[in-house]
Length: 398
Image (cartoon, rainbow, N blue to C red; front, side, top):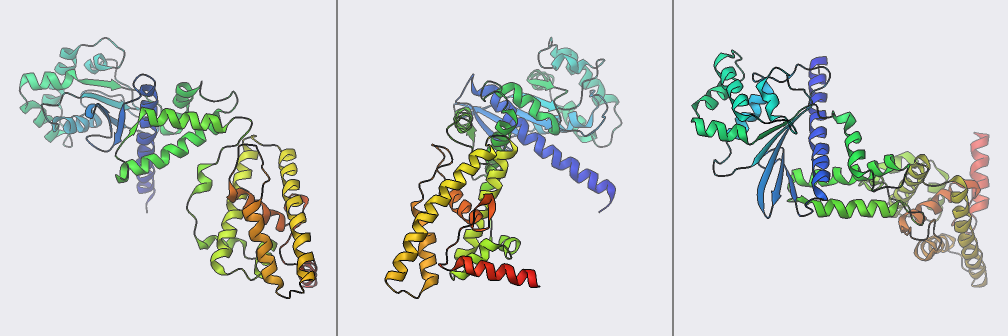
């Protein structure tokens, strides 16, 4: 792939990111005013808003990387957008919005269509008609011709419905708008983690909207999600990082095959299916606590206290199980180890925070302790300590 094609591909990717994130900005602006508003992606336009089941607003987004020339009545982006809008049913009078990272030329009649400015549809139309006649751009030629073939009333009605929102933030700066919109929704100092959680949710919603597995999302949906994220940032619970809950497969086992906690599972004859799921629990738990520590939602001291609670639960069950095994003269040590792990996973009552109750996190933390993390070492096989000493001795000898 050439450098030019790489640049083009990255520009297109940023354009899609901008479109999806700008949709969140727009829904955020509307949610408190009209919670029933419905948003669609890539339906009649890039972004579509509905009220009472009827499309009311269409948004087309244009994203440019780096310096770009001002928008005039001859701009390719403008005529490409007009081409789409001219194909809309004439009976449907949608509000039409062009959202662009470019700036309008101060000398263009199009500035009278700028959002929040003084409107003059006739001035904007005159500028477009002049450009339609005088421009020699081959790309826009068929679109300009189509515009000229509209009757005067249709031309005026089309332009009268257009609002241009120029100078919108680029994809890498949209967080600035999101902070303004949701600034009263999160505790002070937590804006970055709030935005991470909100955008993680929205990324999943965007995929569903684009794949048509979700028809639309409403302002109410957004309000409820913001409230849920805000609740997760309270002192008696913790948020789950959306990235942690991504689907994983058995390939992650390769990353951990030489780790002590995996060897501990092999000593109790864990079959492959259960083994990789245990590795998945460890992986998610490690990533989740790293997320909390990185965003200063959790202290090392609090994590140490929780590790002690888990160790105490394990110690009580392990000692009782080994004692019972000896009394009954059981020789199936691997099965006893499985029983210890299964009972802990099922019955653990330790909580990192009072309202944080995610069983996968506790399961993953037990494997972390079996790996020797957080200052503790636990195990499942009744003779795990001897086996660990032999394993470490062999590593040292090698």
